[in-house]
Image (cartoon, rainbow, N blue to C red):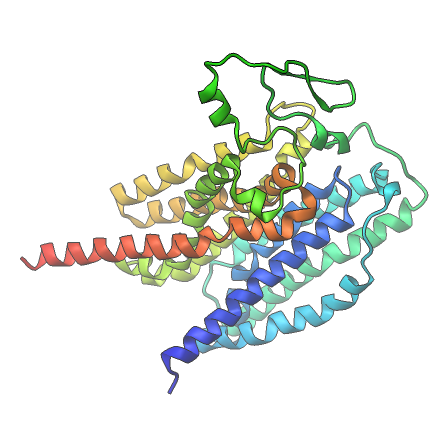
Length: 398
């Protein structure tokens, strides 16, 4: 007999492990890639992280489709096995040197190939991951997914062999430059920009009636990439605005995915739960891939990464409103897809935004402070949902 304390302990250990996995991946990307392609590496890493639910469903369908306990077995085995396989690479990984600040040409082909493979993997899971099949067909589908998962390991080595001697910046594939992080973000009337990107104060005295402007200016970010300690972070006005946006975006999407079972049951769509999980996971994956758009369109579209993140918030409330208003199967699937796309984009973009706004060297601490709103949001939104269901039950029985 499993006690509540044992369940709590297992969930606590699992939650700490997830945070540790994510932090290690983020820090490795920050240290191993230059600023010009760091966000692409982060986006790709977080994108494949979003496919875990779909892969777990494929494993469960192949091993024992009618046994819910198989998910617990997979949760116990797969993370340990993957960690052991990845450990040698992590130990051998060296921080990038100054010679990596100019992006080699073969890196363009590597990232392009990896994004193409990632897109194909997502399409594959959308097509084959949402169908209930026999055991033999499930193994075939799982094998195909595993092959697609291994192929990204081959692309960098193959490209390095073909283009090992080709280096230098590639003007055809412009990305963010290293000096972008040093450009001023907020300027007031008493500052001007020097040619080297620094901010110089030119007016020493301000009018006496500018107290409101002074108050609002406290804790604001002036230069992108400025390192923020944890103490400085929590005193920043911009951080709490960012925290609120994440609380109303990515956290809502995560709470929705965690409660898909209850949502499907309340709409009498329990039989579609596996398909809904596959749709959410795949669309979240595509949303994470789309978070690389600011880097690919850096020279063509002059739009801040924070602006892209804000735009990704817009479709989510529209999807919730449509699902609440119509409450049918087609709208549930479409709404789940939209929420997956929006929340996936925010998940992936937030890591790069945190690095740009509050400094890359402190991202391990700062981003974990940001995502404290996930358990807080889960508690708050879950309590609101419980109160709503309780009120509906009381009204139905009076």
